[in-house]
Amino acid sequence: KFAHRVAVSFPETLSYFPKEITAYTGNPVRSRILGGNAEEALALFSLEPHVPVILIVGGSQGAKPINDIVVQIAGKLTEEFQVIHQTGRDHYHYIVKEASVMLERSPHRGRYRIFPFLNEDQLRNAARISRLVISRAGANAIFEIAAWGIPSILIPLPHAADDHQRHNAYIYARAGGCEVIEEQNMTPSVLLYQAQKLLTDQEKSKQMAAAAQRFSRIDAAEKIAREIIQVGLHK
Image 1 (cartoon, rainbow, N blue to C red):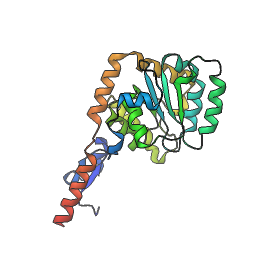
Image 2 (cartoon, rainbow, N blue to C red):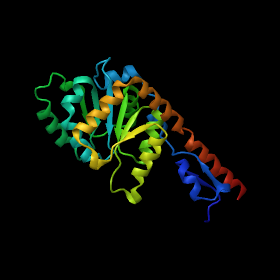
Image 3 (cartoon, helix red, strand yellow):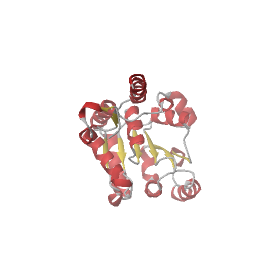
Image 4 (tube, rainbow, N blue to C red):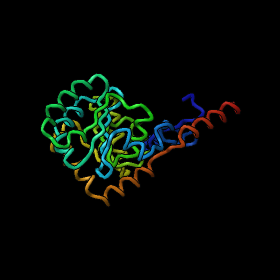
């Protein structure tokens, strides 16, 4: 109630604040994760040029339920696709061991690229080469994925404060940018089916990519910064 101006990340949030001081700006996005180079990405991740890529991220800490399901379907995924999987540092060694067992006899085990963490340069290039992102549904993650203009499957963290990840995910899904799988409904077969569906339906992928771009607000940080300056000057 003391604010001169209010900036909100999602349009649905506008109704909670006084209309005359509130603006829908979106969430600020790190500029260093935008751009990327396809040739650089192919070399950086040792990828095959004509095999579609899936980027899997669970936040910097990783997401064990997502990691566990992904490693179970790694053999099936790598028959058709390549995977760049950020596991989180705490889960990395466990997933490497599991993957070595799951993919022991697979002729495509080199298509499953596992990393504990992707820095901004790696993330930018991974996004540039990917056709699908599988992720949690934090606000930062959603706006970064939208800025990349890539279709996504979002798996909300079930115990997030006020269930905000679930709300975020469905707002983005209604805008057309993603499919949502609730964690309690996520099985290996469900995740595999959704990934295959999105990567083989080119028309659907184009629609979702366009929806992601419409949803993105890559100028959010600049808008907020300019408004802070204006408030400061006229205080």
